[in-house]
Length: 212
Image 1: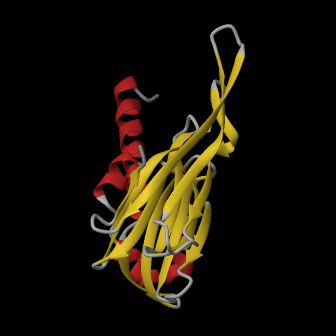
Image 2: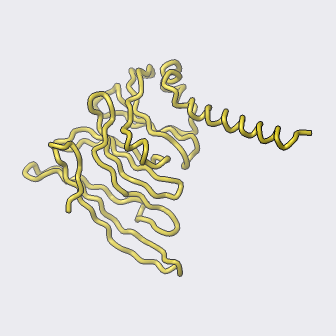
Image 3: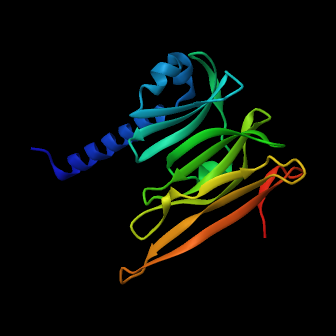
């Protein structure tokens, strides 16, 4: 018969091994050794976004728990052979939600190719991030609240709509976020409001900044 102390120790060991196993999924040496296919097959589900113009760059959302927990990784590779991860910005690693709702590459006039990332937390709240590869690493161009999908507050379709206004070369590049936000009060009454925000590209700072 197991004692309580033994069961407690066994639980701690199992949790430690589980955490180590989860972190080991993103071990760069393992990815290099096994290749992209075997490495990504270790996850519950993987979403891949290859760079449209650079065949040696791909972004992946690797889910450890479906629709719950996963990591964004950007990889340098040649076919299945993996060269290494492209490091992510510190602000993204610290503030992004633990689930990637969507990833896609977007080409924006004056900016170039950026990785558009929508992340969320377990509560369904999250942000839009724009990242670019600069000097061999990913850099943040902007981030803002853009995802809400829970029982108390939510956007239509779970997120704000994103529109890049960059076709008129006589005007600055602007990103427009818009949608409708719904909210329930303590008595269950719903209120709705339009949400609209504009971000302008500042080439000298290489950032999208909110327009006042």
